[in-house]
Length: 332
Ligand SMILES: NC(=O)c1ccc[n+]([C@@H]2O[C@H](COP(=O)([O-])OP(=O)(O)OC[C@H]3O[C@@H](n4cnc5c(N)ncnc54)[C@H](OP(=O)(O)O)[C@@H]3O)[C@@H](O)[C@H]2O)c1
Image 1 (cartoon, helix red, strand yellow):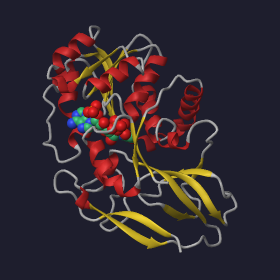
Image 2 (cartoon, protein in one colour; image 1 turned 120 degrees about the vertical axis):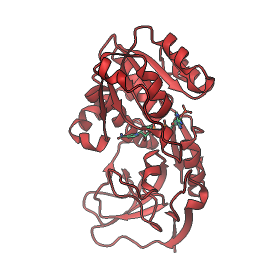
Image 3 (cartoon, protein in one colour; image 1 turned 90 degrees about the vertical axis):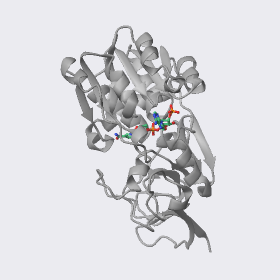
């Protein structure tokens, strides 16, 4: 008998998440019934939103219950099927959670084409993070050629795509990232015009030097002190697509925005957004992202942890910035 392994939410974090908040269990694996299929999970995506799902505070979707399988997207292969639309060997993505296998009735599974890009890319540049980058930069931020775009968490899954899409549109692009290695990557590999290392201790000065024409679009992935610093550089009628506030996710002290007056003086438009609300633009975004990947115009980097049992530690590491590029877990 094949055994499925699952990672459950064992307890809610009190402050920063720890490995004690998770529990690895073995459960028997059933064969698919009529209209069902069985998926082997090859990659698990680890994403910052999962931290919010571990709490019981108000969220934009339901949080994970105690003893429930941790929420998460996977990329894998259909290994048995009694389903009309899926056959054995199909590569799929879906929100099947932190486990090695799942039974499905096909709902929420999407078939992907691994002749275009490797399977794991559909969890990153050609998946939810890539779509998020496109929506925030283009639909909300309305970035135009010649404008200055600043993006935080710049070397990460979303940020790296934001910066490269903005370069492709003729913008001047400044990243903000933690440490010289990530900043060097943004400039020399991804083609950003500059990158500010927020851990170097000169955030305001370095940001000022990197944005002599001010900032037209700030794609905010982190909130907190970095948002406050960028607010000092915003231009009149500039835009802030508010994508995430990762500096505040994991038990950090809440940072109240100090430079609030900048919104008034500069008539800034700030729009918080959740990518799942923008399904109407997904086809256009995916088409553009796929074309750019095919043409080698979008570079992509992953941090790969090995084995489901390492997922909790890799997740905790990602929240602290230990990932370098999109964090996934290789399961097979
Ligand atoms: N709104 C949506 O629909 C949507 C969808 C997807 C993602 N998001 C959000 O987008 C953001 C980026 O997600 P991602 O998947 O691309 O993650 P990621 O950037 O690949 O990984 C997270 C990164 O956040 C940075 N970080 C962690 N703590 C920080 C702090 N205190 N200050 C500044 N930076 C910090 C780290 O980079 P450094 O080493 O550079 O600090 C870390 O590598 C997250 O806030 C996430 O919640 C939103």
